Length: 589
Image (cartoon, rainbow, N blue to C red; front, side):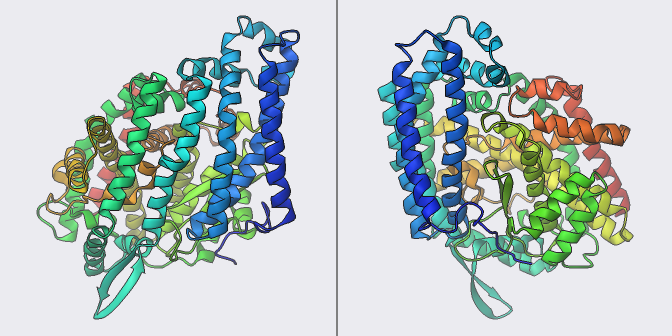
């Protein structure tokens, strides 16, 4: 079984005739869209027809441009020095800036229509895309003039996009010096970070110290990248009329501040529960002053096996089947058809992600698989994203684009399936390991995510006044971790460079991509409770829920499952499930 993904389903190569022809088609589409936008102010004779044409061309161009971009981006993610991928990505980014003007014209024109609801009623195509059209009306409030939008679009290519690429290149090619039992090695950052899960206590600490030391080589470059990106975000958000980058993030996420506040207020109530868990884990591992950061992922219980990639496939396929055949078949298909790039290697970016390729009805999943149970869970998480995408294949390209918070729901739900099913079929020591892994993962998504949210909030406030040095960024991160983890961690061993290794900070289009993870975890916990109440009924309802995530506000999506995300009681009920696991874990020790 291949451990690298296949991209030939997109294009065989950058020199292929299909790729070259699609580049030409991309130019033709852009010209057509430009001409359509010029006619808008002059042609009011058939508004239904114009809007239908706009929807159709938007869907077609979305598929074409996404296919081209995805091929470049996916290639770069596993080979950051690929010259062709980088060159064509920049070429495509430049081409797409030409859409800034017509896109602005369309949005402003749609926003000016007085009888949009009546127009929508006259067409099945428009009714199908009613949510998208009404969102365009709302977006009109934050659109600048055509010339300003063109300038911003072009400047991003040499601004935030360039900074982001530099950060990816810097971290993916960072080799960490480490001395393991007298053998000096230079290993990729992804390999070093995976050592946090190792059974060897000394190796975990050694890897942590080597990781932190390695960041000194790139801290100034990373700080420059972060300052450049966040500075641009602040400037553009102000120009558009957003109160803050957080408000912009929430609007783009189709989520309101009331929901965010309810969730975080509930989380703050339960932080003492997580601190209790950290202290107990520290005590079990022999620490008196709280848990050192490098022991956050230390395995508790007997890790009886390392998983091969083939083991992971069998384990995930079997346990997904406890939920539904459809989910299991999707996952096995992804393994068998080489949709997954699993092995860590130099030149490959860290972490894991899933890219849903609506245009070809497939997904591609990247991970840095080293064989521990956490890596199996990560694969399950990303396959959940892919399954979400498969539930949207009957929707148009426009209606398949869902917001960030709901994106983490299906992935986290799949994690829960794996862990809950797995713990039933193993010996006590391994059950303890799986239970602790589940709690550890929840702690990351609740406690560590909260620290990252606090960090980014403070970063934006300070960046508005001036650039920040690496030292200042480290201080903010340490302070954020203290507020979130408190006495649960040994304050002498925190992670001042967490801002360097988390790629979400370095994307101008994904600011505050931290709270969506907490939302996804807690929402999926609530869903899992409903699943246990009526398994047969829930499976169909769940697929329906995922299929409408591209054309609804989040609060309306959750209402489909009778969940009110404005109520702290809902968030508390999900957090209570984690408390129960923590209590069970403590009793088992």
